[in-house]
Amino acid sequence: MPSTLIVYATTDGQTRKISERIQQTLRASGLETTLVDVGTASALDPAGFDGVIAGASVRYGKHDPAMARFLDGNRDAINRVPNAFFSVNLIARKPEKRNLEGNKYLRKFLERLSFRPMHVEIIAGKLDYPSYRFIDRIMIQMIMKITDGPTDGKSVIEYTDWDQVDEFARRMAEAIASSNESARQSENSDAADPDQPGKQGN
Ligand SMILES: Cc1cc2nc3c(=O)[nH]c(=O)nc-3n(C[C@H](O)[C@H](O)[C@H](O)COP(=O)(O)O)c2cc1C
Image (tube, rainbow, N blue to C red; front, side, top):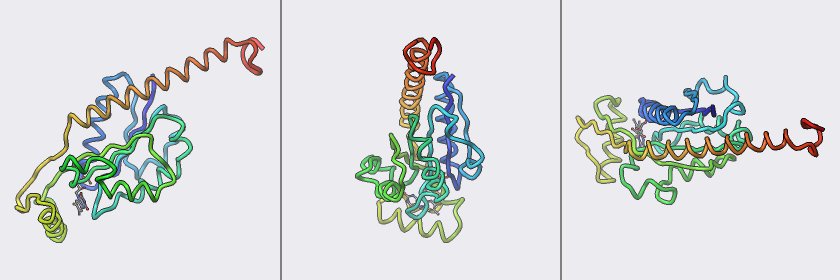
């Protein structure tokens, strides 16, 4: 059974919630999954997985630097298998900000990485004024005012489009399953080919 590593960086839990939903879809597609916070991901070797999906939220324009270190540090292993990075932020509540051209946070994050994800997805997060510290609430209210969003300090709005998350997870499940199947077939044909040096039948 193909196995997938899902790594997330979250502050308030929304990126973890999205990661858990991705995990459910992958499992329903017959894939094994391991879900970890980026803080504990260094204990794992991504080379042991058939696919890697990583996600991080944006705070004040930036993704968690621990995620950048994880992706750069494991670049070669991750590049060998189908992989994706998803970004969670509030400007993505606007559809035109859900692509690379429209989302400067993700563009800047990727520019600084030596790793290039095979697929990127931009997912809207959650606005939760009552749970924010005073200074954060004021700052987010200012950002929302500039971008025509809600400024009522009591607002709690989950903008995440769960259909988008499910579709993203299904596409990744297909890519991982089919790449794993191709790798298995090529191993089998190598093993059966007596002309291959060092293989069975040689
Ligand atoms: C302190 C703070 C700063 C944020 N900065 C940004 C930002 O610069 N741009 C943006 O689009 N969203 C911003 N957000 C919104 C978060 O990206 C969004 O709430 C997301 O769902 C958080 O995901 P998490 O719970 O996984 O950390 C910010 C949220 C907080 C609390």
